[in-house]
Length: 139
Image (cartoon, rainbow, N blue to C red; front, side):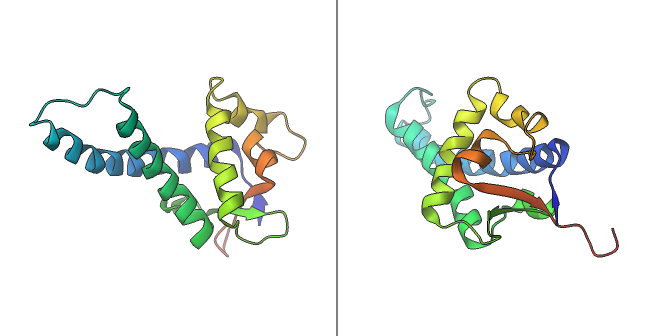
C-alpha cells in the first residue's frame, strides 16, 4: 500500500470521466426524446440535477460498495478512511462534493497534493479519506 501520485490519480479520473460521460449521454436521451429531438439547454435545472445525480450515484456508489470505481480498479487505487475502511455514504458524499470544490478553482484542490506534506488533496482532507495505491504482488 502506497500513497498515490498525481499522474496515477489523473489516469483514474480520465478513465472514470469517460464512463460518467457515457452514462450522462444515456440519461440525456430521454430529455431529447421528450422535446421531439430538440437539444436540451445545458442550464436547464432538472437536466442539470439529473446529470449531477448520475455522477453522484456513480462515484458514491462505487466508493461505498468496493472503495474503487472502474477507473480506480484499472489504476489499482482505492479510497479509504484513515483507518483503512471503506467510506460510508456520508463520508463518500462529503468526498464527492468536496472534489467538486477542488475542481472549481482550476483544479487547485487536486494540485494541492503536490504541496501537501502527506500528498493529500483538498477533498482528501475535507472528507478524512485517502487514495492508496495497491501494486501487483510482483511490483
